[in-house]
Amino acid sequence: MFRKFALALACLLICPGARADAIHLSHYGEVMPTVPWAIALAQHLFQKNGVNVTDVISSQGGGTTIRNMLAGGLGFGEVSAGATVSGITAGLPVKIIGVGVDSADDNTWVVPRQSPYRSFRDLRGRNLGITGRGGVTYVYAELLLKKNGMTLHDVNGVPVGTGAGIAALDAGKLDATYEYEPLFSRDESKYRVIANIGDVFPRIATLFLVATQDMIDRHPDQLRAIMLTHKQAVDFILAHPKEAADLARPYMVGADQAVLERAVARMVGFRFWSEGGFNNAALANLVEVLNLTGEAKGKVDFKAMTDNRFLPPGAAPLQ
Image (tube, rainbow, N blue to C red):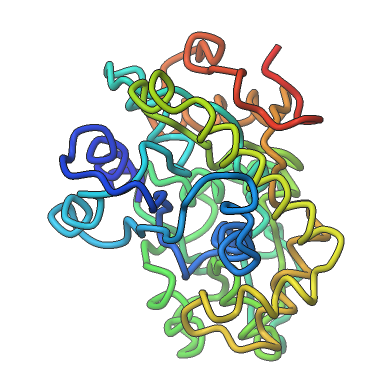
């Protein structure tokens, strides 16, 4: 997944023919980071703040698809933290201007409701669905096992995609696997949570709000308006989760109203979405994960990667 994000980030910077009415979001319409942007579109918050954003370009798909989809739009996007750090380290002219999500609690490990297993500690010797070695979900599994006094050598780790993992769980070939929101809220009558990433990291920066240097230099007021819009949308979700789910539902793929209401309420409980500001503990936890995935080696100089000037009022700057 990080490779896809990296391609998306690179294309954001180099693809020609930009339109002035679209921003970029990976897996738009499928994952919970969609919700603030859906609220912003539904409530016309961009226009109220003086910027004519009318669309979000999704980066879902292979490299060619991503390049084609990102051939237009503003030089602003919400991008995986790992891909952002890797891209900046590689010399791409992009800056972090805020944090979009500083929780990983949309990533959950589940078992069938009738399962006897209650925690990762109970999975010793059992079949555990994970992603491939080096993937972020693989690392999360390692950390959850470590918290329970085990390593991957103590379980039978089975690399599977999300859909394949759920199918294998239903077929009895896995004892536990991972699932993302809003899929878990769709399936919660069938499955029970045995672990969240928040059990290890209550806060971890997972998505950054980024801008190209060209956008920073040429359109700083538009960036401030977009950042303010995002904060207003997040504030609305936290204050009115049911109404937020109602507004976001037309923008989500395969999530009916009841499912999205449950997913939004669950994420509000975790304060999943960031208002844009920086949390030092969330950044420190990100660095630990990036060192395990190989996307960073040692310390990460976030100060050199970040431009604080576009944060909305009340959002904590990077210190």
